[in-house]
Image (cartoon, helix red, strand yellow):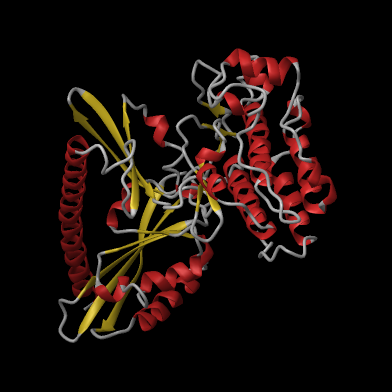
Length: 448
């Protein structure tokens, strides 16, 4: 009897695998078709898309260039998924008119950038602190290396209803073993009544998870075969798993499992182009860090770091003294993190200028607006920042406001001329939490 059951299960598994392969081909063809359709619309219309981005439920960024694989690495890292990092969905390459185009598909944030937001509106203390804290939270996550662990796993759920009045739920678990090899095992084979609810299915699955000593918080991905009972929007099994696993869970169909699951964790990442235009506003008033085209990753165990030949990259207005002078230690990853901190201090200044105190706020202006032209040269910035060692002016009204005066002190520690004196991202976050907790006008969940 047992041999017969095993034979049926193996047959069923083989059938499912073939079905999955067919689905993958179909999905890929469909996506490529959509991208081609959008590309044609771009060519026909100058107004439907703005600078290569689509105003759809997702944002599509098009890079017309030959793209190295490493440029996808930061956004393609499983453990980079974070509420304050721009969500990455997928990418594809296509050739048109002898040009290679890279399509990056990300979450779309209709409010636009922090730069746009600050130009439109003034901020309350609550609003400004939510922006600063969420941006700092994203920067901490970027700068921090998360080491790989065998506790992380992903699930694949397949359902078959070939058996009359019942269905078979096959659950596979994918993980990294102690030899750093990816493994996939059958977690459970469960026979369920055909009309089982997602809650009932979850209870069965949860029993196997607990029996194996696994924890939902370590589940970083789940894919399904698309069965209605598994993926129902409001009450589906995936929704219940997401509630248990938290924000880092990736929930898509089977093609997510083409990727190796976080075998080396998340490397530390230096952004190298922090500015208000690269921070996007979410509808809830928090924000996400975006645009990793210049990012540098670093793995502590191997010392691996991939940096281009030109150390002077980014936006000139936000470049730190050592970047402008080209004295940055290109062999030391910490140097790039400290350059990020300098730029982040300038972003804090932009936000605070638009924050109301006693009903007053300054008009939006970019850093050094009164010291350099609209499009400053390297020499313009080098003279102001390095030779004269000037920094943005701090409005007098801040001195009479405890929170804004605390922010002024924090900025100075971020944009200090000596990079070794600048605060690390985690210290910035903790300082912001302390300032927020002492401000009666701020009502935020500070357990972040």
